Length: 239
Image (cartoon, rainbow, N blue to C red; front, side, top):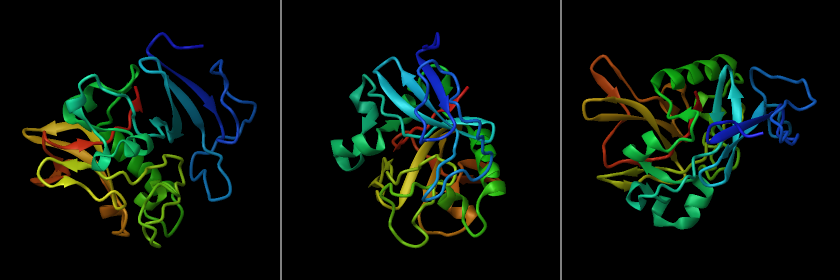
């Protein structure tokens, strides 16, 4: 049954099991708190999020104690100036979702879900760091297995926690579109003065400090400081 809000979530313990329309858990009792996905098996705890505004249904995944959208948001904001498709190609919106302006990103998550802040993303980062496979970076553990990433040994993702981050790039108000096969940029709700933070997943640095970077201020240095002219993807987290 649908929740009272504009969205509802159904839960299953594996992508191989259809989620229940009643919102009850599936018959499987398997619950994995660490690495839950390999190339051959998938035991992550998934759900489905129905957005009543446009009828979209999104896959969701539980990572640690957090519920995340496992897909990029595809809600079509009524103001088309607040949206972009990567490289101005509508087919890229079908695959990667929309790139959102800052204002749209803050407003367009389904009711009951919200844009993540630094604390949410650092909690995700810590969980993945503590539970990932030895020899894999945080970014590699979260990048999709076949989502358009530059197919190098480092670039290839393993998607070990089911978040399925695609390589959709981003858009900067000064430099234009980011390389679609090397980056994935996501809005955060945090801001400071004229700095609007975002999280970047990168394909090729090969270490935890640089291939998954959360926007924040540290020692008078800003990490991932976006501008009002930026357009990035949205992954909502459950309230």
